[in-house]
Image (cartoon, rainbow over all chains, first blue to last red; front, side, top):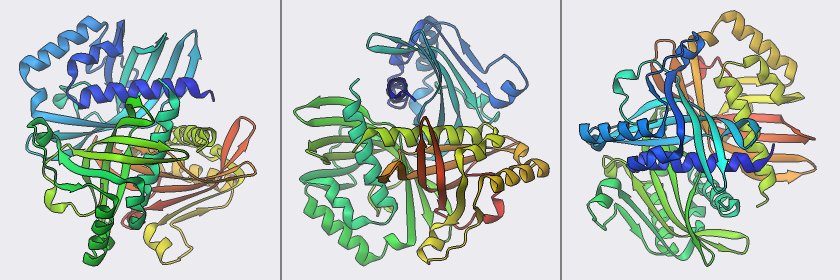
Length: 156
Length: 156
Length: 156
């Protein structure tokens, strides 16, 4: 185990979920490379070999569009997320690209104050280190449960 | 990213929540400097610019008083907490003082065995490194939900 | 604080829970030494000084038997676990053996998609470092609640 990539991914993850949980949604696309891919799918879909996701974006520009839609729809203001992540498991490292897998759970807090366990799953990421900046070249969010699609509005 | 402050805060956090979750409440004030400030507030209060908190202490002595009250009221014995924390995000570091932000969720386990998601939020800390010891000069606990005040008895 | 043992245990923990959560149950015994001990008990039992656990194994071979039983009973396929762990607290280190304590919560996701907070507690581990491999010589899982025994099927 080399600790440097683990800590680099850990720090990227912490900043990533902080942006979401702290309603700094406009900063969210910047955690991706320009051609960064973002996908949300379920464990069931992965096991069945279904490539489709609930959400799919193939560039930072698409993510920016998504943020604009969310702001227009005013969805984000009515709720708050709290991510808690595990330690990233480094599965590969080559040529400045780190493959990592990280468990997460997300609590959703409604405007009324009600809290619930909203989602659990794992991030399957490819992280590019470019000087001091680490960014996601690919982020696949695999949800443990399939009972979530209709509620999905905010990034995970 | 320098890893040293991240790991120092991470270790302090782990010992801090262990003291609470393991009912070693008398050790809790020692995680603060003598003039350490401790405050619990809500995200809503912070957004509205309300300075008041649900709980406010400005010294280690006040925290010791609080522990004594909790022991006298016998509140602590009837329940158990389990904190799970994220990785600390270091937001500043200057002159031996580290500013860090850490997500948390807390599960409460009643004497009956019943468990519930009790709280989620973030710690906003100023940590002082003094030789081998790291202590909180300031700890602000910002709860995601406002539906908690009447239940707050044990430190978060 | 020396960071090396903390990171070694952290990495072992991450791989351990990944094997369970990712249904790679056959890999689970390999995280233990050949004479590794595994025990699940409750905080109440520990406080009362009761040595018995809900589950007790004293070798890797016993853990392999347990995996075979679980596979035969087909229990594992109907549900999915998601562990989220805190940072390990290193409580001792001597002669290549690290004693560590780590908080955890586990979410259980049923085949139907329903999720629930399933368990919380702490791992009390003795970890042996042997070259590049870290293994559990002893793992005691102390559950916060006693309301779990009948549901326990999958490793924690």
